[in-house]
Figure 1 (cartoon, rainbow, N blue to C red):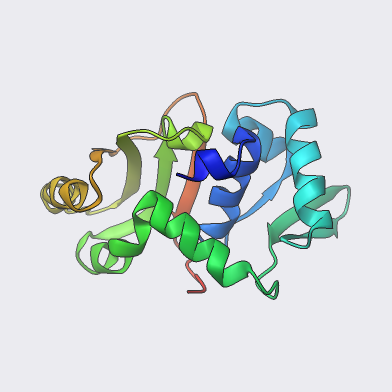
Figure 2 (figure 1 turned 120 degrees about the vertical axis):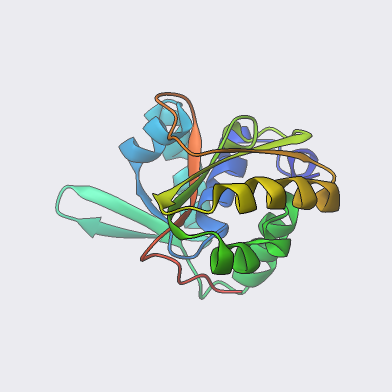
Length: 174
C-alpha cells in the first residue's frame, strides 16, 4: 500500500520511525545503524523531509536530533496512515494495559526495511511480560489485519529495526 505511494524505501522507513510515535527521535548515525543503511542515503531523505516541514531538526552540540514536526498540518493524517499501514491503530492501547511492564517494542524484518510483507515481526522487551497473552493477541490481531505476526522477546543482534514504542517516550499524538 504505502510502498506504491512512497517509492523510496529509506523515506518510508523514516516516516514509519517518526510518525508511528511522536516521541521517537534519532540522530543520523543512529538511524543509519538502526536501518542498516549508509549515512548518505539517510541524510538525503532526512534533509528532504525536513525541508518539506515533516521533520524538525535540533542541534545538540555536534549532533543533530530529528523528530516529527507535530505542528505540521499533515502530521495527524500521516500518522494515521502509518498506523493503518502497520495495523498499529487497532492494537497498541489495548496491548499495553495487559502486556506487563513493556520497556520497548521494535519492528524488525521486512517492515523495518521499508518493505511490505504478509508478516509483521515484532520484538517486545520488558519486565514481567505476559508472554502467553502477547502470543495469543498476536494471533488474533494477525487475523484482524490479515498479516502473520511474529513476536520475539529478545532484541536482534543485527539487522534493521524501528523502535515503535519506548517507555518514557509514549507521548503519542493521535
